[in-house]
Length: 326
Image (tube, rainbow, N blue to C red; front, side):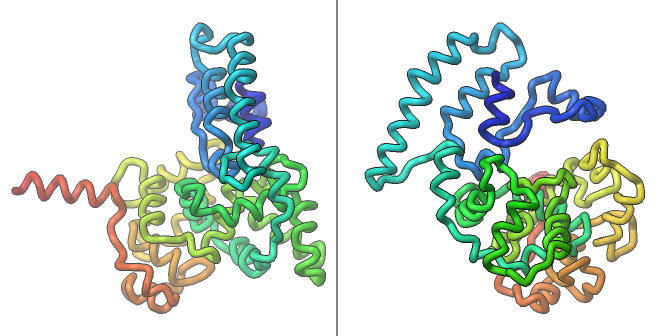
């Protein structure tokens, strides 16, 4: 019940999607331990706390801890649905409220996609895999309020309420704005955004593709994304970090190419300064970056973004070292 509810609410899967996923040790371990996270899709769809509580109670690892069918139905009848109805009435009367995905999607149909430029989404498709991965990592750190405009555009394009955007839906969203685009051009744009090659554009991919044009790339978010990739807090992103990230999709050549995108020091790893050069100097790969990071930001017209700082893990390490010395 919990898994079915998850799929209906979020449009994705909490643990595994196909039998092939069972060969992925990390995904299998999540399934065996009932380990999941309400990620960016749940934030983006503004799914209510009651919905999350329902799913959480139905996805307990131990059977004795899970809700029975009677308990689940009681919660739906006495808590979830009454609260949802109250929210709908409040919205009808002009007040603000949270909405579960079906209601929100219907409201969002009236939102136009004029805020999306073909150049923006096309540019994302030209980026290397590392830069796309960083933007995806950043997308997962953004709060709902930060992406409100994108959220409405996403649901306006998602005409089937599937929680994803298909090629047909993407074409439909752009046809009025850019009637001169050919099918081949639209397919190329779609492939560029479809980072995981699933045949659908997911919420995080959509946010990543438009995060730059919407001013969502900040130093703090980059630092947090760096820490997500440098999981051990070494101060650099290694081959093993990316191997762990790719999981079953790991390929030595792919990871080598990802490292090369930003390995300006040619030492087989990517430190924080190199990551900033990749993100801010050259719009495609960063391979033309020269000089220091401050100069890179100036050339990119982003000198007002602030002085580059160490990612959180490295700042914490330095603070502890300073404390020990004192």
